[in-house]
Image (tube, rainbow, N blue to C red; front, side, top):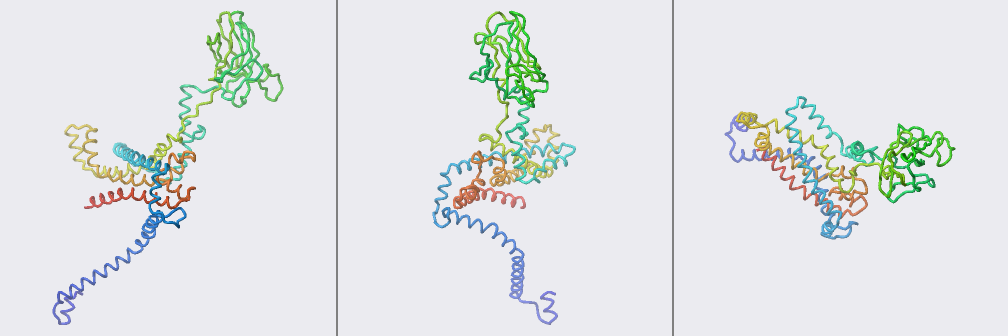
Length: 455
C-alpha cells in the first residue's frame, strides 16, 4: 500500500514533498544498513587477511631484526646493498620479461592451432591438466627430471643416449693395469708397455678394476696368445686378471678369466701411432704388416675415460631457465584456454572477408586475429606478470641448495631472509613491501582493463 493510497483511505490529501523525501531517505538508509550487514563478513576477512598484514609488514620493515629498535629506512637501504637481494631482483626481472611473453605467445599459437584439430577438447584438456598439479608436486617432478644422474634424470638419460649413439661411450672407465706386469701409465691416463716389442712377438696385458657384472655381454674367456708370423705380426691379449672364486697366477691368463672386448689398442713407434685395432671378444688383438723395428703397445686414455654424464641442468648457469621451463609446463594450458575463449568470440565475417580478398592464413593471423585479440592478450600477459612476481614454490623446490642463491627471486629471498636462516624479519618485511609495490601497478592496470571492458 502506497502512502497516497493510505492517505486517501484516511480521508487525507497526498503526502507533502518533505514527507516523500523523508520516506526516500529512510529507504536508502535501510538499504545501506542491509548492504553493510552483508558486506561486513567479507570486509572483516579482507581486513584480517590483507589489510592488517600489509600494514603490519610496512611497520615491521621500519624496525631491526629483533623488532625492538626503530631503524627507519635502513632496511630499505640495506636491501639494495645486499648482493643476494640484487641477484633476486635480477632474476625476478628475467622472470617478468621472459615467462609471461613466452606463455602468451605459446597460448596464442596453441589456441589458433587447436581450432584446426579434430579432437580439440581432448587436446585442451591434456594441456590444461598440469594446472591441477600443485606447485609442490610439479617442483618434485621437475627436480627428478633435471637430475644430473642419467639413471634418475630423464633429460640427461636422453642426452647421454644421443651422445653415446653418435660418439660412443668409454669401454672401461674403472679399469687399470696390474702393477708390475709391463704397463706404465702416462700423464694423459693411457698405458704403454715398458719393453719394446718387435714384429713376431707377443704381449699379455693384464687389467684389474672391472667388476664381472660390468663386462660387455659379448665378453669371452681369454686365451693365452700365440706368436705371430716373424717379421710381420705383433699379437697380444688384454684381459681381466681376475678368476671368479679366486686362485690363478697374476699376470698370466688363467682358466675362467675373461677377455676385454672392444678396447682400442695402438702400435707406437718413435712416439707416433703407426697402427691401431680393437680387441675381439676374447680380448685378443694383432697388428699385421709391420716393418722391422721396435714398437710399444699403447692402450689410449679413451678406453678409461669417465662416461659422458650429460648436462648440469640445475647448475648456476641453467637453473633459472630450467625453472621457467617447469613454470611454462604448468601455465601454458591456462593461457591457451583464455586466449581460445577470446578467439571463439571473434567475428568470423572479418576472417572470411579477408580470405575472400586473397589473404593467406599468416596474413589473417598477423593483421586480423592478433589485433582483435589484443585486449585478451593484454589481460593474460598482465595476469601472468602478477603471478610470476610471486613465484616461490618452484624456485625453492627445484633449485638445489648449492645454487639456491643463483636461482633466488624476491619471494624466495624474502623467505630466506626472514625464516630460512637469516632471522631478520625487518629486512624480510622490507622485501615484502618492495614486492607489493611492484605488483600494485600491474593489478591497477588489470582492474582498469576489466572496468573498461564491462563498460
